[in-house]
Each structure stands twice: as C-alpha cells, then as structure tokens.
Image (tube, rainbow, N blue to C red; front, side, top):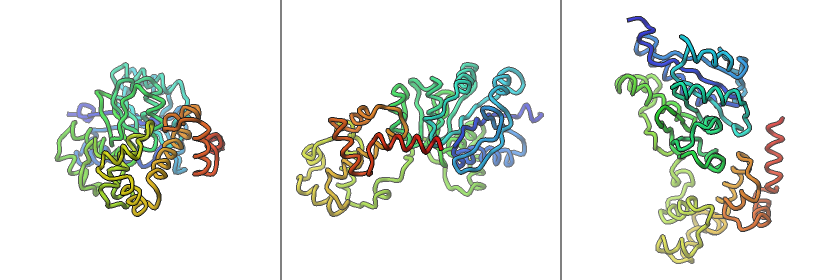
Length: 332
C-alpha cells in the first residue's frame, strides 16, 4: 500500500495575525509524533495565510506560510483538496475582518471538509455563519464577549467540542487533547498512549474537563460555604442575587456570610460580587462592540451612570476610556 492510500488526513492550518503559538504547536506536534510512531505519513499539513506571507504570532514569532487564500480556494478542487481546515487565532480575534477568509471557510464546509478553530478560532467560524445551533468551545477569557456577539452558537467552557464535522477547542494545551481524540478515532488507544509517552503527558483530558483551575485552587479558599456562594455569584451576573437569597441557598445568616467573606476574601460579599460583575464587564468592553449601556445591563447594573461610576472606582478609568485605550493599543 502506498503512502497516499494510507494517508488519513490532509490538514490546512490557516494562521490569523496574533495567533496562539501554544495552541498551534500542540495541535501539530501530536500529528508529527503519530507519523513517527506509525512509520508512515498518516497526517499531512500545510500552513496558509491570507496573502501567503509569514504571520506573526502573539509571541512576536513569525511563521512562514506555504499557501495563500487564493491557493486554497483553488485547492478545494483537485488532488490538493484538504480533508480538514483549522483556523489558528488568538488575542484580538474580534477585530479580525477578512471576507475572503470567511467565504473560503463556508465553501470548505459546504464541500464536506471538516472545519475547526484553535483557541479563539470559534469566533471566526461563527463570523462565517458556521456555528449557529452548533456546540463549540472557546477560551474562557473570550467566552463572555463571544456569547453576547453570537447568541445562536451553543458555546461551552469546555476544553474542546466536536459537533459533526466542526471542531473547536479552547486553546492552550486543549489543542493537544482534541488532536489526540482525533488520532484515537482514526487509529486506536495504543497509538494515543505512545504519543502521550513521547510528549511526556500522563493522560488525555476529556472534552468536558474544566478549562480553569477549580475555585478552591484558583482563589486559595478552603471554606466550602464561601466557594458555594462564589459559584452562585458567578452564575448570576445579569440578575444578581440578593444576600438574602444567597443566605437561604447555603443555610447561613447574612451576618455569618459577611463574617466569612471578611475572613476568607478580605472584603464584604457585596463588594466581591461587584468585582466579579465588573470583571465580566471589562471582558465585554474589550472583546465586543456592545454599547456601554448594554454591557451595563448584561452585568446586572440598573443604569449606565451607576455602572460607569463603579467601573471608574475599581479600574481608575471609565468604560469608554477602557474601550478607547484598547483600540489604540491594537492600532499601535
């Protein structure tokens, strides 16, 4: 059997400026190791950019491309037709605009080619209209802005999601887990285990494993009641719970909750709740084009003026300044 007959997948990685190097590398390396372990080229890949020129990652490392969008449009017909296309993106993805890229992704998908996104790639897939009613994953930091911008997409804070022939992952080392799942489906668990041994990783994480550290580890808090309250707070940002509601849910009095938060968090529960809501607001201001008043409502504020006052007190600048400073930073 010749190598072409044994080839499992031909993959195009489309590089977007400021793409995540860690997601890109951990997607390609398991494919390389799989080929080495198998002794033949089961996976083949090439790198594409909009114009065929090198692309700068968010780490300021430039990666050369093999093809351009024009090349890849022609490759949809013929022997160079890929079986998969992955969009590799990272920070500032919400500012990426390329109609040709979106049209190419739609055309690829409509021709039966599997399409995926690494890190924030789901944002570009959604912009192409591919994620309406589809399950997808995106980096937790981008999830608030994404869910507001694309309400029809079923986005989850999972490591990765596979919905039919749409593949998305949250970035970082989650790309490794998604590729290992792909390789396992193509071959078997023995090959996956061999790749893990070569990559010095001791397990393959499941799609629905959490992206972020557990609250206990992230906050350094051990009290189970405080952790339960914080989970409730994080789940109710648009319509904040009253302290009475919280007290009823955890079986404590308001005074007990106040005392616990002073001890464990160094501030009142009301102040901590406010900071959580303002942190979400900051992500929305940076990652979306939502009007400030809509950001305020999405984060549980009754008025834009109250929101602006609280925001300025915590961050030392107004919501409008936050957005203007971010635009200026990106333009630079």
